[in-house]
Length: 394
Image (cartoon, rainbow, N blue to C red; front, side):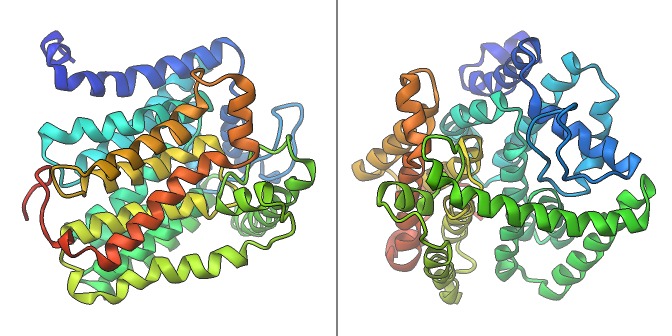
């Protein structure tokens, strides 16, 4: 990176995009606060040793692993590095994947910095937790992008890879409806599933890998129940930062089932797909991508503060899909997200207030508003067929 590149004002967000997460990762390592990174490395070590990937290992780290078997291969190169180098590089890799995904969107280069600025606070929140969520957001975006480019084999790879790492990736299947090669897409899904299922066996054994998928299922079921039941210990849980969590915790309905929310949410998320004539409309597709990115967070009982980099990526995409000039109400909604979701996790808010936004799931509310706006615009906004000033023309 040359000095002239840094001097260009519009490149400042790009420099900060990589520099700040790397510094955050390094500072976490200096303070010895890289428990998540230790869990990640443990997936590879335990895969090779063929010991349960999802058990508690208090001598190695706190909590337990909830990532898929193939994640062990992704973290493998980092296990060869000293943590002082590996942690910043790992965090920078997460930033890189999301950066490349946002860069791939049909946004004119002169305006791409808007996406980075909207997302960078939540990128930092994920980076301070040494989280993998920026990559998950990137994979979801890329799964749409490659469908748009009619490269379905790559689209299928990012869907399956994201799913095999963290189940959030499975929502990328929604973009199959936009594919012009649906049979090839399905064939690619099957092929990549087979490859990623078998690949870890080269470092372990077939029987252990198969058993690990059953163990993974059990761990996710247990974690989901634990997150939902955390309402009984209000003030302790930092998860279920979702629409369901908000209603359960603020509304006083601790036993309300996720299905009460998920069934109507899936119906609403699916309704725009009945507008077949809109499928070739870039604005429509971008807004649907935005809705999917938000949906997977606000309707997940596993959502926590660092997960919101996925949802806020969706908010950024929604914002640049608006007709230009941007209406005041859209600016107001964006400001609500920036304040209530992004900045509420920073030192701008006192610790007690930050905690309140999490334990009462208030952090999820602004993104819920954007999701409902997305669905409304997808269904009823007649101006959505017009390209905005910020988008490349097809």
